[in-house]
Image 1 (cartoon, helix red, strand yellow):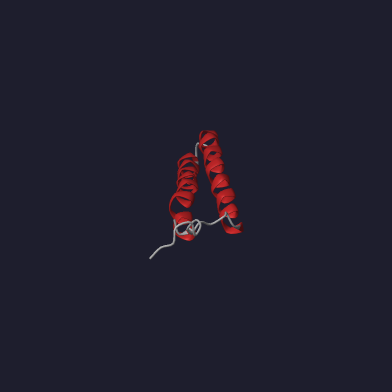
Image 2: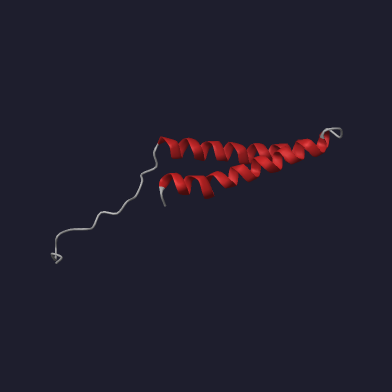
Length: 76
């Protein structure tokens, strides 16, 4: 039986540890760095496709880390 007025039930919530903050800073740096690579790709015609592709990979990783990896680390 449950007791009325016993108090709130504790839920499992994480409070943003150091790992989460570091991962979010890293993902933000990857995202902004990828956008920068998009911009400078057209200044180097010989390696433009490689630089643009690297920017695309960086932006994808910058989005992938908070959406997938941190969800599994935090247990959400």
